[in-house]
Structures are given as structure tokens and as C-alpha cells.
Image (cartoon, rainbow, N blue to C red; front, side, top):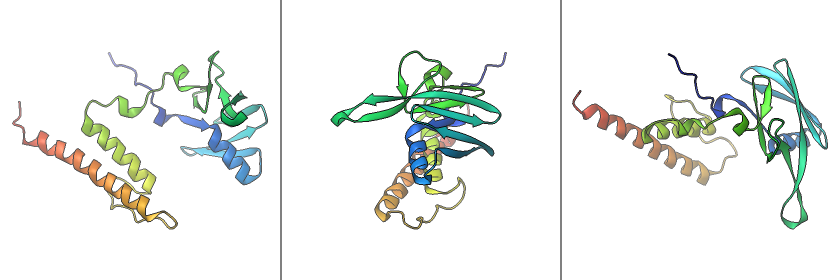
Length: 177
């Protein structure tokens, strides 16, 4: 019997309210174009509501203002499926918009069995953040990127690569059972 794949956050469209509000302010528009995995959609932000039209699906949710420090209000999204809780990010999976708990989403790194696999995943994420691809040379520092941060990322990349390959060497040195 084939088991169903565990849904992971990395394979789901995440709508982060802070990121959307920053993009909306920068574009000076409440209507934003959204592209994910070669599919394009729209996000419309209002004072108390967010509507998403993506891949033939239209969903909406409320935006709640939650009090925080210094008498400020922090905008958070209400999960349409949960009765409690406000979230910074909601995920669109299929035709449902909900929090990661309602969708049962897990992080890919928590599903791998060994530390070397977690190191491999962290290495791929770091390479992606640096603008590179696995199996290709380490990318050059991007124009405008901080040198110190780039050196720190290179050090972390070297450590993750070393951890992954040392575990592989150890596995290859063992006699077959």
C-alpha cells in the first residue's frame, strides 16, 4: 500500500502579510500581481480584508489588528478554517486558504532522517538565497550585498558542505552488509 506524501510548507504557496504590505506600499497600489511556479494571480489588500485570485481559485480572509508594544497595532491574517488565532502567513493549498496547522503542513527539514540530510537541505536553501544552483560554482557576491554577510554565508556554506560530504565518506567506508 502506498502512503500519502506528507505535505510540506516548501511546496505550498505562502502569503505573508508583512511582505505583501511592503510590496503594496512600494508599488503604491492595493492590487498586486503574484507569480509562483509559473502561475500568475492577483492579491487585493483592503483595510480589513485580503482577497486572492490564483489559479482559478478566489479566496478571501479578514485582516485583524492586534495590539502590541508601545500602543501599536500589528496587522495579522485570520485563518478562515480556524476559530482562534491570527497568523502572519496563510497558505493556499488546492482551493483552500488556511494556516499551516489547519493544512497539516510540516517543514521538510523535520521529515529527513539524518543530520547530513538536514545539512544538505540547509545547503540548498543557502545556495538559493545566494543566487546559485546546486552542482554549480559558488555564486559571486551580488552587487550591493554586504561583504561581511557574504563571507559569513560562504563560511556557513563550507561548513554545511563539509558536514554532508564527511557523512557520505563515512558511509562509503563501511563494509557492505
